[in-house]
Length: 239
Image (cartoon, rainbow, N blue to C red; front, side, top):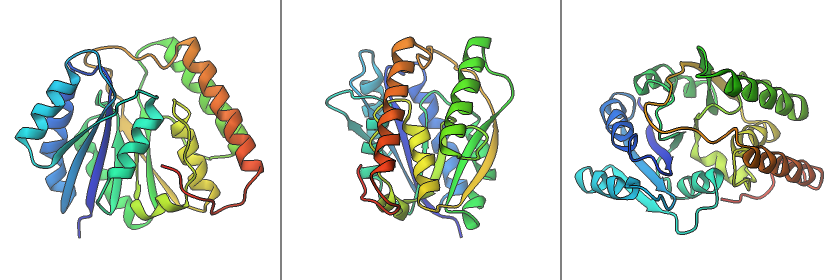
């Protein structure tokens, strides 16, 4: 039996990608879910992203838009989406379609055997700088947290919603992905992995390798390490 899925899609200044991303999801979800909702978390965009998202929600009853009043970072947007999800399975992906949405059909069945499924990138990145940044970051978090996954930062993660109550999620920035996987491991959540052919951005550009982003990521990682030392598994949920 197909699961019911809440899809969380954080968006900030994605006016050139928003409509295509949502329509791609709308075309695929009926074949992989018994019921679904698409939650667009719009974080105070300065372009037409909010307008486009609201239009999509008016056209499709399965689409809901949550406008984040204060933009606090990717992690805060994802947590807001998690808190508003109503289906048994939560799936989150980026709004720039980092892979062909149709390939989700190969990942969903893994939830029969695992509590969570995370994606990893197959294929080349768009440039050497991003590839180097990803390798260094993945190596660092693997060494520090012993996550044993292919790609901690790939924006496809799917899990049973009931798991949320076990997780202590606080990162507001890019460290959020690593924090989520680390919390899975800390709480004994079984993790399946699925490879996805990487699709370069169709429009816009990523800012994840900016120096300010890197510094904030290291800061949030350090804060998480300190929290782990002060608590035991099964801590409180923060979303």
